Length: 390
Image 1 (cartoon, one colour):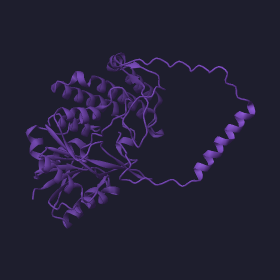
Image 2 (image 1 turned 45 degrees about the vertical axis):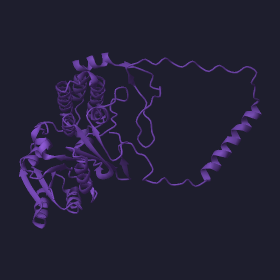
Image 3 (image 1 turned 180 degrees about the horizontal axis):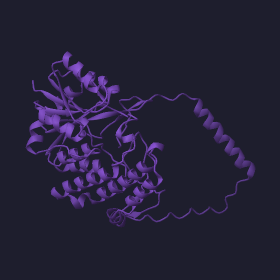
């Protein structure tokens, strides 16, 4: 059987690391190479890795100086000897059958990439986030239309709204395909590095296999980089935008992706401002520095051009959108202006007395209270739809 190399970049994550490694050791697909890349951790992460390596010969430990998640993953890729490669984050974990299912699907369709669904785990609950696809294969232009487009962003919705989360941990990749196309993670990028990698990889694919099962557990860790202040966030976001733009120019898709890139850029600006205000703790705060940084972000030349290309519409205007658990999002920006609706004219000759109006109100309240008392049928997890959103 062919070997699957699973790369885990590790940095100061001792609290969650054992759960992550255990979920890999207990995979139903036994032919694994588990590569634990310790990226200069200062806690007990390295000791935990070495202890597991003594128990399981499939585990390889690489200890290196801290250079960031991108270089840590690239180090793992260079060391990998498997036919296929997977990635997981050290604070997440996977279902026992994940790599067996992905392997079967990627072999069935003979694709260079196979993607699955995931759970978003919080302290209170675990919610499945699923594709609207079945077990199938996407080919050529459909890969752009259904995956790449929606990883970058929507053309006329909330700037931060994305249909498909572009993360590497949800996939299995053919190692030879990555090597031949020189696909690696961008050094020096510490946020959205996997989005850039996924977009660049999918742009090279002629087919992508989809496994409909939900296997990966994406854990919402309050101490992760997504939920803490990042001094270099704006600079890193600019790098990500430029890398995405370059990829689309090289693939002759710049015009097709222009709106999506514009809204992604607006989302990055909002995220950077949030980072400078909401994410900052007292110990990080320096009012003058904060104001100066926000001013720098808002006066960005690129932002001016982007805002000139998009037109605002009414915030209250409802438009069709992809769903997450049945909820719809409202648009703020669009390429078309929506005219306000005319108020409805009152019908002549329609008069309701005050007492009749009160009686109708009481009747409505009685029906509502009766409906609340009736027990609601629980929805089956298998039948309920929870479309993913980033």
